[in-house]
Amino acid sequence: MAEHTSSSITIEAAPAEVMAVIADFARYPDWTGEVKQAEVLGTDGQGRAEQVRLVMDAGAIKDDQVLGYTWTGEHEVSWTLVKSQMLRQLDGSYLLEPAGAGATEVTYRLTVDVKIPMLGMIKRKAEKVIIDRALAGLKKRVESGEAGFEAPEK
Image (cartoon, rainbow, N blue to C red):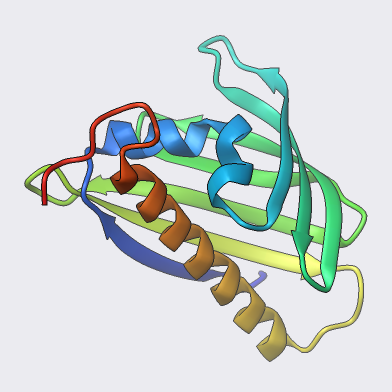
């Protein structure tokens, strides 16, 4: 079984507000950094993305990939790699848990396997950087109020 990397952050917004930003793939280039282009290729019966094409530029790694998404209730989304030029595996998830007083704890889990040889230690460090940057970008986007709802007063 492949090892995964995970990290959590608390965001000052309700879980529904956080999930709305996660589900808004068209806006990913605005806040993720590495995602330069995002295109929803298919949706489920509730209008949620089931397949998304992402054009990534993470410095040394540039990739054009398609991810398949699974939505579990209102507080969890997971994804798995459908196709990629650079990756053999990309499995991840966001789990949202209410953290009291209008806050949400977001846990991001990620497992990445590249087609080129890479030491496990270096791969884990890269996963950690990706997760930390994504969580920081998500927090900033949600709390900025630019996502179409009012951010809570601090």
